[in-house]
Length: 390
Image (cartoon, rainbow, N blue to C red; front, top):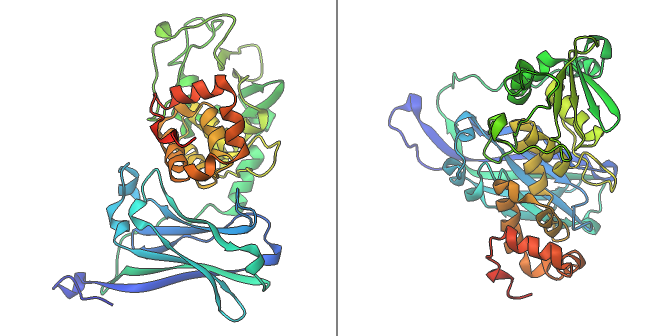
């Protein structure tokens, strides 16, 4: 424990060591497990994520520490300096005899909006876990302890489950809906008031800010940028009959629903995940099923289009955390150039793991496709010097 750094005892802060750990039944865990949030000071919160079968390294467990940004950090896109003052060590232990399987020192100097999670995808080999119960946790040094009671309000409690269930039950209720989404033949129903409160995109959509005076004309809008919403004048956006924009809005005076929104560019399960988040603030990513339509990439794409910033951030964090040497190239070749922040995240991972990536079958197959590799060089803006070891 270090020295008190203020002469006024009522405001004195003491630096100390803190440890946060959680016990789970390893034999029953089939997917990622998140710890409850915890704090190292009155306004610095964290959360752990344990994955029993690490994506890209299926013979290992993964453990990550996530920073939960406070109101000040949400406004700072660069690195968060206060967190770098901490030293953090992740650990996995046997719950029976408290013996340590593995530990990992976290780079606390890298936490930022773009990198909220730090940890190890190969924290421990699964074969080393011999007991039924396992402990995962983190130890901090330089945690802030105060000598006076802090009167700031703590974050609000999470949503009660019955409230989530109630709102989830309202989603899709055609009898109370005034918006009909037509998603590749599937119909989804929602309430325009809820969507408008939760998304500026839908707020402008339903208020007619982006619509032509004639409701028969397709809505000409663009809202998909990495730095937030950009609404352009309808007259300035190119429109071709043979390639219509993906969202069409028409006032329906003779139908039960006031609005009809056509969504031909997303799967109905992807759109449903977006609507469920707008109703309940809950989202589940499925990056493990081959036929999943609710992967972090799917949800990132739909959240970006409809300008749901919080969901976009969650999906981006999930996608970047689950990057592996086997999937990073496919994401890059898949057209992430329109999202500079996501491209930066993927490029940093690619450069850090280049020697392993270039040996994978996924990379070799993509490079052997001349058309796709040309697109990759364009994505890199011609800067492919670090690929000289191909």
